[in-house]
Image (cartoon, rainbow, N blue to C red; front, side, top):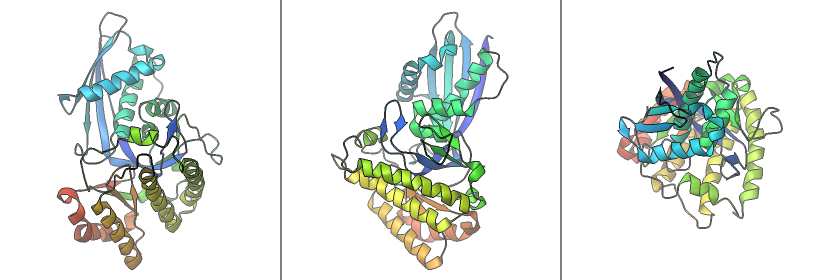
Length: 338
């Protein structure tokens, strides 16, 4: 083997039950459940050449340009977890990555980018070891988690669960598990229209936000509620109760931002237009009886979730009522990955 080239594509995901607060080496303080998206994804390619030594080197390019910040993050990840990457010794790596969604558009990209990186590395491992078997996706989820917690969930289609949960026997804090086999058909049709309120860099990073849960006066109650909501949502995903799904999704989103507002120091990531969109969504649902609901990531942008059967009505509602509150009228339409 003189030179090899591998590539992988991995999507972003949006959590319904939120992961917020961690311990140890990227272990969650509560389980989380997410939709896997299809159109917001990262494409990564790695070219590897033998260098005749027992060391490895790397260069990282994002959308064709050197990216020292992300290169440093990847180098740290490989050093911190070197016990899993011995097969890289003697290789010079050139890593190129690009996103299908606009840079700084408010889509959480670490889940997509780090899981795509891991999938490429595991392909290299297979080639180096002359192993023709397929990639172990549980191993991919485990290694993705070590890079970015939410990345653990991106390697499985439709929906996944990350975190030990009593009713799911193979669930674990170490890796995510797929939920596709239990998901009612209605949830497999869900859209996620992402309303871009702001594309500014967050005033408080997710890493800092997680750390502020340590010693938070409401932390233990939050983790208890998240565990209860995980069990509730698992039942909803099986029985197709869209109304209960809405209740859980919106409560989880609101509670995530309540944790931020009651941290020490307190902070907020929602903006006035975030709140305006949320209120309009609630009124629209009440008046039209369309089962659309909102969720939020750790930022100001609103994810509008709804079944495909209501796509035309919701798109019209977005056009007529919500785009005016989005930065540059920007909305990214995504759908659950099959």
